[in-house]
Length: 585
Image 1 (cartoon, rainbow, N blue to C red):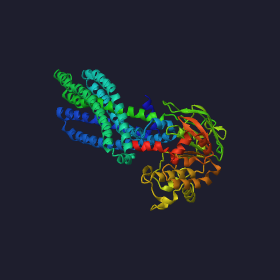
Image 2 (image 1 turned 90 degrees about the vertical axis):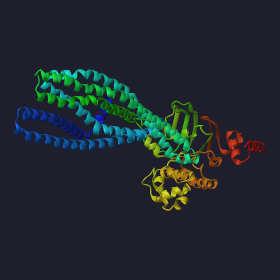
Image 3 (image 1 turned 135 degrees about the vertical axis):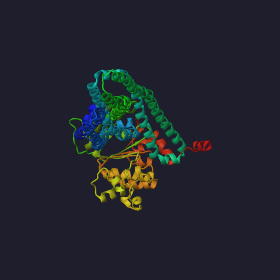
Image 4 (image 1 turned 180 degrees about the horizontal axis):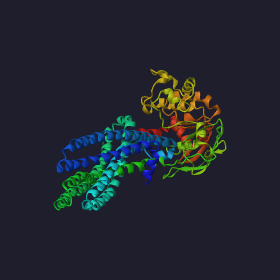
């Protein structure tokens, strides 16, 4: 069973603790078996044989067994909990480390809520399995085995009679396990969905409140929460259908024993103390059978959680270093040769893209939303591999570079600005943590961020809220730009970096950037013509195809898409058309 093999590999380093815990569990089972034996001995030697001198020693032994059992069980729980917590931490570390190795395509397929459920919920199931379930399963198996051996030595015929219901219990337990497994799969999947709804709502609470969608969000959560409850109730119903049957079959052993044992006692085939002994050990036969449904539940929970965790741990990144990946001091010449690309399961996003950007040039990319601008930029950093064609940096295919080496030479101010719950200085210096404070300030000045940072009570030591909560869109964009500049990259990608700032601030940032971009190859993705009109080359992307290219003046002369956008943003609408828009408003 691959799940068990994975667990054995995972507990490496803590096996001695776990095996010690299991060893103590065996001692607990043996002590549990000792008490009925002493009780039967008391009946035999003191009551039947009248040996009153044995009363105190036997009672003292029974008390000693109780104290020993409690003490040993406490030690077992401490040891197994210690081991399980460390294994719990190790699994979380493994998952987190694996997530750092996986590429964009993995996160495109798996949501944050789903991954959080695996890191927190599923790993806790594994912890509980190690700390409690394994010892519980082991003890119940030992109870049954020990009781079977002891009762068989007293009277093997009675033991066989008692086991007549065992095949039926085995069949019922098997059917129960087949029924409950898919239900547990649904529970874990629904738990992930519920987690995703909560995570999205908390992250987007400002949007929810701004659009007064609280009622909608509550309804959405209630739907997933109701579904989660429904599936759990379904599991309870499944358990309720089988548990009474198992309990009834197990309890029938008492009736079978009273009839058969009483008959044997009447016929003189067993003595009273043997009858009492077998009756005292009967719980060790009945208990495991009665608990078989709970034991199956624990095994199924572990099985499902292990599968979900292994899905992450065994995921292979699509973007990996080649065997002979090279390290190269990137100059910044970028060339696309007949590049086509499409996301899995979607239509082709980029089609036959070809262009070249020389060192020190500024390449602007404009086009309608969804035309593939951001995707094109992502291919330069090899966040995805192209389907056709080549992306070259300094005449070397990006697939031949060491990925970390390539990306270390590229600075990106992303469209979706993400800031960490860190100081402003820490966010700006994120890509180069050893950078000096003066260099952080210099980058902030270029990005037009130094002014608003110094107005904050703690300046650069101000803690930014989660995802930059508390900052305006323009402020977040400027911090993102400063972070990209701090890397001193050979290639700088600015994805709609100044869309949230006013025109005057944008002009100041552009003037400051001019000095920075002299020795860099820059890609500017923007919707504002003012952001791109000074570029050395402007590419117009429409539906994944370059439909226009040239300088600002050349594109205006073509009177195509670029010209229409320029007219729109310059306020030169045809008065008649503008009037129609107003009238229809």
